[in-house]
Image 1 (cartoon, one colour):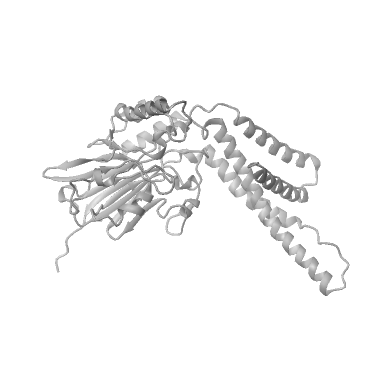
Image 2 (cartoon, rainbow, N blue to C red):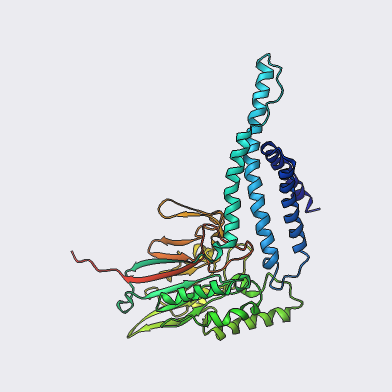
Length: 408
């Protein structure tokens, strides 16, 4: 029964969109191609749900068919939006003629140029989503920030951090592109690399083919990591709780195999001479229905408010709900999780939009509250929709600077 309403809505969209194509294309063979493409995509999508997906329901062939189906759906929705608007106007014109004139004309016919505009505008998201699957998902960008702090120890002035997040290794399908991205990270030559969660989609062995590549990541002070919501296996149907626990333990071991120091509600000290920074890593904490295993109080035990702290917390809602007003005064928080919804428009200085902003206050990039910063990494990998449009995979480089004391 739960499928009845979505099916009715999809049928209504199909019928409405078909009217636009029929207005534009009079040849039966063109309409036949249109109907054929729709039927083939829908058929393969349904078939994909009967195919096994070893890493979970949002990967592989099923994800690609879902992405193609979504591309076609957005094309048709755009067409429906414009056609529906025209139909409203047609009905108003018809009603006006009947009520206030002696005209005997029938309902005005649909105009071909409106259908042309609707189809042209609908082609933008359609082609964008196809491009996102073909190339956008590996269109890595290095985003660099320089942040000033009053209480940064002088020995750490100029200290550089590379942040990675949301690798989602179970979705990768191109070794050459991942090798390029690993080299890009190493080229930054940062003092430390911090990974802020979601190494896999569901299963620890998703990392098996990629471990040799990610083991090549290097930084002077090492690589530190935390867990994200997908790393607990909560979105996979294990045969038993024992199997789920074993998968989690295997994932923890993967971090060790990579040479990464996994912080589970713990902290480490980064030392330069007699000075130090406190690196705090918490397990996943997300508002709503997400796992709340993060324990900042435990992880930050023994740290003073005056100490300089970097917090790694996967879900930015943790910063919004708990950290930004906390009396421990966390100067810099690094998060991920949102992926920027893998879809949006970003033109620096002009526009920054994504559907993610309607769910998260902090969803991509750098944010500030008083003297406290959070950077939300847009993610290294992808999930569900096997692509990215406008919100590109990200390598973040942050340089810490000590604010100069101005003597008057």
